[in-house]
Image (cartoon, rainbow, N blue to C red; front, side, top):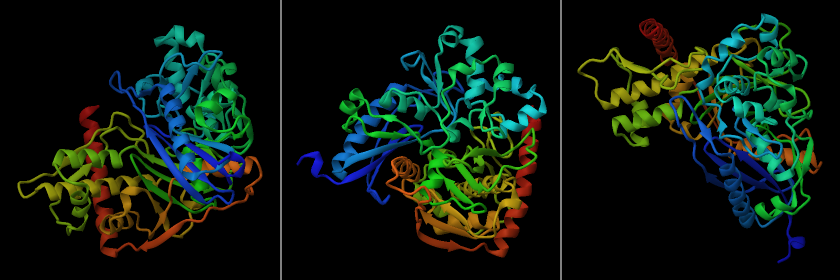
Length: 490
C-alpha cells in the first residue's frame, strides 16, 4: 500500500523524563494510537539527574515508527511536548557537550543564592520560585564547575527544543518552555537581558523565541525522515512544555478551572485570564505561559506523589491494591502522621533539604495503619499546595482529577476531604502527547486554533463534613511536625 492512499494524521511527540510517548490522531484530533519507549535517568552524584539526549532521539525514532505502523496514516504535521526545566548545552552543530541536566537535578542549590541577591523588581518579573533544576541556575553552575563546557556552549536548549533541532535542523523555542527557565521576563514576554547580564550568561546562547507553541518551526530533514519514517518536508510545530500541552490536550483552557494530576509528582494547575498586576518578588507558586499567543497558568508543584507512595509500598512490602486499599480503613485518634517529603519539596515549602518521616508511632500501629498514614500525608501535601494558589482566580466548580494513581474511590474521598472541594474525575489519556498533536494540526490549520478537546469518563466525589474537619486538624498537626523537623536539621 503506498503512502498516497493512506489517510492523513497528526503526530505528537511527548518527551518525558524517563520515557517518550508518541500519539497519532486524525485531523479531527481524535486519538488513533500511541506508543512509548523508555530511556535511562542517571544519578552519577547525589542530587544529580542526567540523561543522554541521544537516547531521547533513538527512543523517539522507535516510538514514532511503532505508532505509525499501528495507525497506518501519513503524517501531515508533527508537534512536540517536553519535560520542563533542565537544560541541554550543545556545540554549533547541536551535539550535546555533556549529558542533559534535568528538572529534578539539585546540584545548583548554591547558585540559587545568586538569584536571591537580585533586586526585587527583577525577581518579580521572573514570576517563579527559585528552583535549582531550572535552566538559569544550572547554566550558572556550569561556569565554575565545568568551565570548558561553559565556554564551548553555542546553544542552551530545553529538552523538546533540542529534539526539534535534531529533526528540523532549526533552533527555536517558544514562551511556554522559555517562561520556565528563570531567564524569562513574563511581563515583557521575552528573555530577561538584565537577569542574564547579572548572572554572567550570554544571551546569544539562547534560541530565537517564536510567539506561539503552534507556530511553524521547520520541516523534517532528509536524515530525520530516514530515522523516523516520516516524509521529508513534513511541517513541525514549535510545541510546548508538557504541562501547557496537557492543558490543551485535556481541554482545560478556561480561567478558574483547576486540575489536580497525581503521577510521579503532583501538579495543581489553573489557567489565568491575565498576569497579576503586582507580581511578588518571592512567589511560592509557579506562573508560566500557556501554549497560545497569550495566556498564563498558575501551578503548584509537589515533588512527592507517586514516587513517594512507590517507596512506601516497597518498604512495607505491599501491593498497590493493598496500599490504596488502606484508604478504606476508618481513621483512629492515635493514627501515625506521615510526612511525605522524601525528595525535598517545592510548593509551599520551597525547601530541597526537607525530608520525610513517620511520626507519633505506637505499638498498636501495623503496616496497614502506616500505609493509610502515607496516603493521608500525600493528601495533606496536596491540600497545602492547593491553598497557596491564587484563590481569587479559582471558581467553585469541582477540581478536575487526573492521573493513573487516583482511581480508587476511598483514595479519591481522602483527596476530596483534604481539599474540602468536590472532585470530578476525568479521563485524560496521553494529554501532553495529544496536546502536541493538536499543536501540529493548528500549525498547518487543519485544526482550528480555538479547538477544545473534550474530557470523558466524569464522576464526582463530594467531600464529607467529618472528613473535612479531620483533615483540617491533621494538616495543622503536619505543619507543626515539619516545622519541628526543620528546626532539628537546621
